[in-house]
Length: 195
Image (cartoon, rainbow, N blue to C red; front, side, top):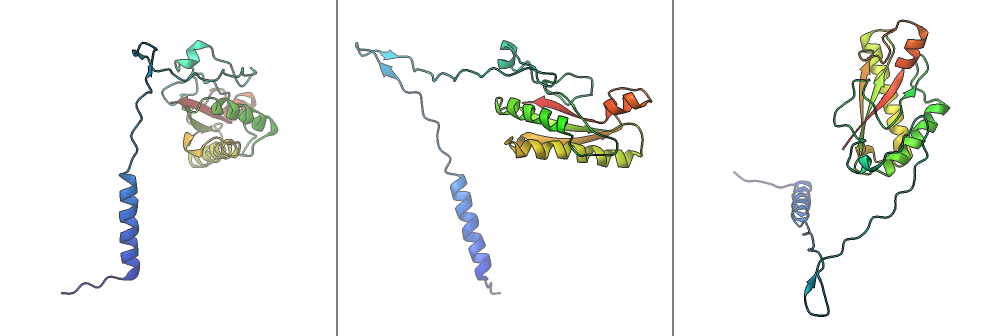
């Protein structure tokens, strides 16, 4: 039995071997620099100080956090049920539409600034709909709404791997009413923030 290797297969094997070898060459973290005092004793390593945080302009869609924000108290750990608070305000949609309104874009621009100041925060964008329409239609529309917000945030410089989309369709209404006011509240994207 003889084996005949194709040049493409050989090239693929060589490329794979190089990728594996490069992946195994991870760098080690350097130990902290130790300074010595004039007497020859070691002084504790100096830490680099963080630049001062720029104040965030508060509004109806963004709230500033105090010292609890540094401890992560402003970031929830689980997906939202619609009643949980989030540091990021919901955005609303028109009936049967996933198009971002001017107000939604303005809100998302503030969200992008907030997220750029918190690089460890991740967001699950939850698409929601009102109760009218079929389950399948509303799940698809909720996903389109969440993707529209995700794409706009990504276009503003938020890393796409920090943004996840999910659709709840009409399953988690914010307002359980059966009138236009309730339906308008339920046509939204909610932003569940986590680490």
